[in-house]
Length: 320
Ligand SMILES: [Mn+2]
Image 1 (cartoon, rainbow, N blue to C red):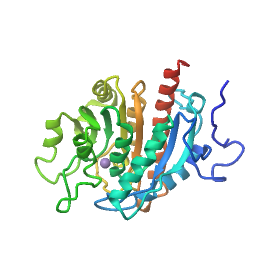
Image 2: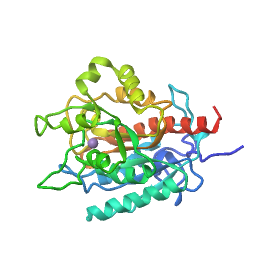
Image 3: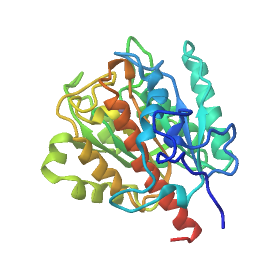
């Protein structure tokens, strides 16, 4: 019987001791032999407001020491179902945006070519664009996207087309995402323009504003999201600013009126069965955090996603 990588046992070595890796898993230098690679992208060169998400992966690793082995609701034990490790941080140039995008694409390509599915800790939301370039090589993916912002603007500051407010517009233009299989959940906050979301809606993206989520609740909304993703490969992108800033203040563009952490957890649990090609948790900015709460939220959302992805893996193998 295969024995997969296991986390350091917190009953033997306390959580605050030892090397800081994602979920206390072994650190590896290659994704060979992994089903799921936990990887950091410490880069925030696309940030238009408060920078700091470059520090996200390190703090998420720290807080992820609190994750345990078994999901308390689904009973999924991810480390028994799939081979998972901390594949480290991508090496990304912090002062050259276009080069950084290439480095991210190349780094994720190596993981995908090794046969592993990436679960990423960002980084700002522009990191999702080069990740999609690496994982959507063969065909456009669907997208289930939790965020306060649509991130489908065209440009900023007189023509800058690559910022954390534009990744999903670029991804559609590049044929990486199928807009008819895209849903954005939790969108809110004041807009730049009255028609700001018209382009996204005309492309076919389903935008579920926070007010609609509040009226319908997680189960109804996620039933629709699963139907939109259909049974085809889908990317899941979780922007931590979808959570209310009272619970996750450490982020670059906080917006009032967000999800409770338990609502976000409930929604990710309802992704069970979705064919998640890759996923990320982005925009955790530790310089604005309080007591590590935002990084803990990021780590917990990664664990929730990991359970879904590991269960997928096992089902594909015919083990469950
Ligand atoms: Mn975003």
